[in-house]
Image (cartoon, rainbow, N blue to C red):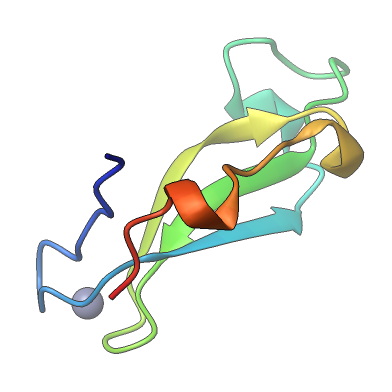
Amino acid sequence: MMLMLKCSHCNTILKLNIGYTGCDWDTVKGKGSGYGWEVSLHCESCGRLFTIGHIKDYNNFAEMKPELKCLK
Ligand SMILES: [Zn+2]
């Protein structure tokens, strides 16, 4: 069972968010590495954003199957 993460501020279930920032210099891979896609968890209730890390290519990220998620 996969548990969903909740916002530490308002306890709302966080939504996965992937967006291009191009800020690969923010990662341990460094500037010019191409890790420009930011993966984060977003709280739609209070607007907080918890960044997990970056990926190189949006298409290389695989979400869990819907039936494996614990969304209620
Ligand atoms: Zn929140």
